[in-house]
Length: 160
Length: 222
Image (cartoon, rainbow over all chains, first blue to last red; front, side, top):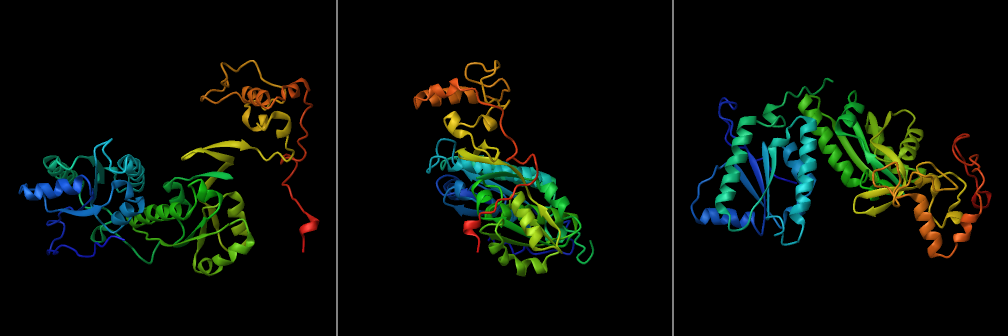
């Protein structure tokens, strides 16, 4: 579902040059516009984030997030409207429940719940968007590479 | 419908710990409706178990399929091909589905992915309540359509007990007193006179207490 095959240039020592790779699922009516505004205002935020434009955070299926983690992203930010401000009334509230369940699964399988975060903001809150991006990047940087990153796995295919 | 709840990812992972090629089988009937074992739930569980195994360094080759009904042999035909390629099968059906698959594929380990809970109804989105114990001798006509066998904590046939308080059962958890519900219901359909009859002890022979039940209806046999 999510194309993550385009890897960053790999150096001779990947561990030393590792940079977190973060996906940000941004709602069309708030976070995406806030990210756009941040760009217009020339606000700086880490380049580790790839933005995925979504019609509403309520439309992000749990499978989308799990698929991205399986393909090796290090962290995911789900950015939806302020509570009570969803264009579709309660899409962001549903997204919060979905992300909560996925966080439980991530903890249970050893990926770590901290790698997935949901935030709420409005289209005018460009500084908040930038701040949240900084936060998730720093959180994931502290956690290190995802254990599901292809280069990070100790796969021993052939023996069980 | 049959209501079930999913086992944890850790439990699922442990069930298939010794296998490398596994088939996850969803069921498109009751457990799809109760959001426990349908195509979506199989997909999410697959992601979780696959990732857990990757992290352990023991990748799992996982195939998913969801069939219309696991409890009917007719639909199990669709499993023949994927099952042949798998070391083990994990059924996301109710207990009947798991056993039907195990009977159909005697050479394959078959594991349950769900805990089958009860016969119930959907009260509201994602809330199910138990309504029937499948006792084999329905007495709902005597009680205005509310089953005291299932819904009274003491299974009283001549209730209520002295423990109910303001329409709530003393067992707690905010559950309503079944006998209060029965009274209200009989009153609304003008059949309160039914409460004047003492109901004799229930005949439990048609229930599962004797042995697993079997029904044969000759008029439909071919």
